[in-house]
Length: 102
Image (cartoon, rainbow, N blue to C red; front, top):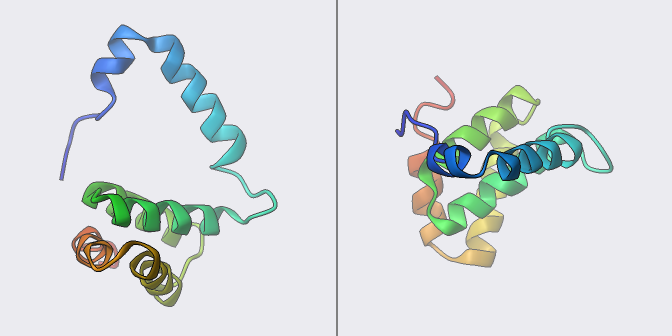
């Protein structure tokens, strides 16, 4: 698992853009709105599974659990990722979930 910030370089060369991203995340992603926060994390986790982001799956699944998501909800989100994105999302999801429930 990566231990460094994947946005380190862009943060150094364009800190204003990073601040814009942080504000957008705080306003729309990290809070309950029309969708509860745990559903937002589950959706993002499914997208990361489709796109091959193992560390993203791990992080977002952990955040979803902290926001109240169950194992069953995480499994269902990954089944939907498979339905819309194919078998690759199941492999990525499985690898990304290593250690989440420990």
